[in-house]
Length: 145
Image 1 (cartoon, rainbow, N blue to C red):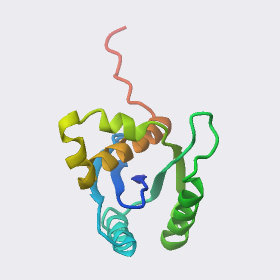
Image 2: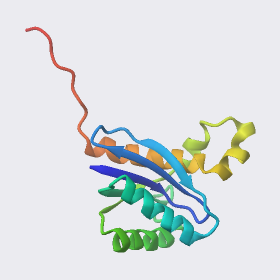
Image 3: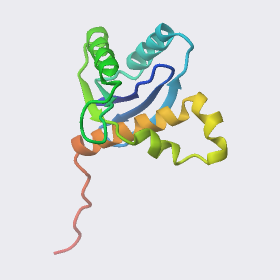
Image 4: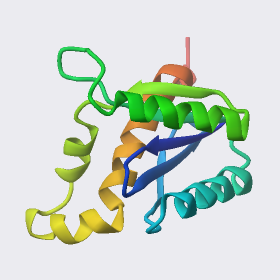
């Protein structure tokens, strides 16, 4: 299993990578100015990393209903499936951007936001949630008895 975590946005797409080890690692965000440039760059990542599963953050509201961006993310998920022919797993992304931003000093948040670091950290949280459910934890061997 080779998973690509995706935090979709209209200006930036945060990315992370994880595999059977069960650890999500941030990748550089896609920050190209044009949406089609970001799409092409995404295809390069999928191919180079030999991705088998796409894990996409889904914008639920706090009450569990689909958020206002849900239709946009649904369309993005449909395009992912059509273009790459890979399974797309939707994962609740509530508060992931807030959690990711909290790891950055307040004085640096504005400067860091444009770089996509927050988006890729959010993608890492999304992917780690998915991996925690899919990859069984490694249990230490019992010594003795």
